[in-house]
Image (cartoon, rainbow, N blue to C red; front, side, top):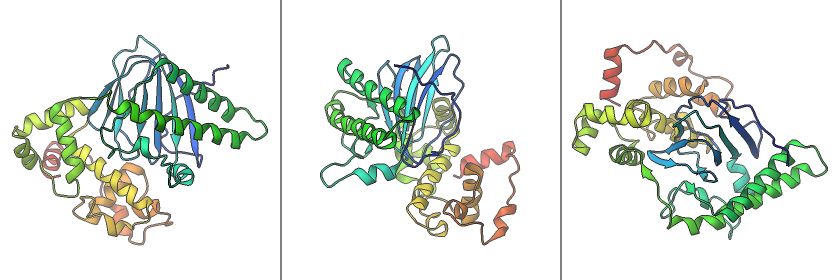
Length: 312
């Protein structure tokens, strides 16, 4: 079967309404920042030396491994070597597609459900399972790129077949697979943040909670995650805010429940991250209160950065 290879780009927004699929092959992969999506991602690993980090959990990937990532999960690939080509198939699925085809007896979201007992992002496949799923992905790649009668319907039928098969396989894997925390301290800290992001968080309170110094806490977190603790907490709050906005909530109604102390801080953080204001993200043409448009974005000085890290 002909290979349909794509040129990798940093786009993290879906341009199609139901799904997008990519086949990437990089001889020299560049770095990828910690990020999240508004859609579900399925990542089929083919070759390379990659450690994949998802919410503080570390997965050392083997060829044929498959990762399932939900919109709420911050994630990042770490490349251990550039000596081996990095090849993978990436499938993006919109929540609307899963909603549309979920029934009372068939919950297509189940394989992505992070609250599911013994949930793991990793599906380590047997050879027959790997060949079966790879065959569907290859056909989906070919069908989505080759104009033919019934292309859209056939592509959607392949996608449904793939997601159903994932959900059938997942319960068999949950008892057998477990991830390794990238760092025990960092993993526990991320779990704590995920439960307490609406509350005020500071280096002092977090260091006291985990019985370590502020320096060790911030240094270890940055070593493992590649970003500061302050940056991670802001990202997590923005992820939650973005999901609530997509569910129809208003910006003024959600900023406090996502952990922002005032609307102006929320506004600046949201616009700096996503390039649009919270109201524009919800579909409003512009902001009714223009004073936030002029908020300063001057770079943090050393003292400003320390102050931001002390009170998050």
